[in-house]
Image (cartoon, rainbow, N blue to C red; front, side, top):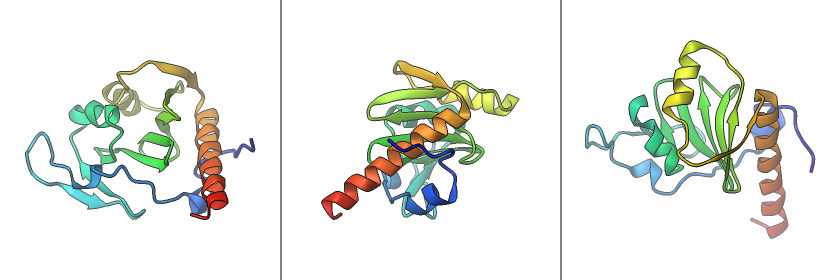
Length: 151
C-alpha cells in the first residue's frame, strides 16, 4: 500500500470523504439532556460535549466536538480522535483495531489523551507521523475501493 507522509496533507484532505457516524449528528447531550449539535464543515453534524464525557463518545465511535478535541470518521473503516486539530491524532480505530499516539505534545494534550482513551485494548502505540500515515493509507484505500465500486 502507498503511504502518505501526513493525513493533513493537501491530497488526503481533498480526497477525504463525507463519512459520518449515522446517529452522532442528532444525539442528545447526555450532560444537559438537550440537542446540541453543529455542522463541522465536512458534511457531518457533530455533538458538542464536555471533555469529561468524551470517553463514551470514543467508545461508541460517534462524531463529537469537545473543548479542543474532536472525533470523526475519516473513512468507513477509520475513526480518529484529534487534539487541537488534525496535526495531532490521539487515537485511531482502523478496521476495528485501536492505535494510540505515543508522542507528547503539551500538558493539555496529555490530559485529553487520558480523558479520551478508549476502553478497548490498544494494538500499538505509534509516533504522530506514523499514525498520520496509517490514517492516510486507510483513507486512500477506502477511496480506491469506492472508486472501484463506482460509488
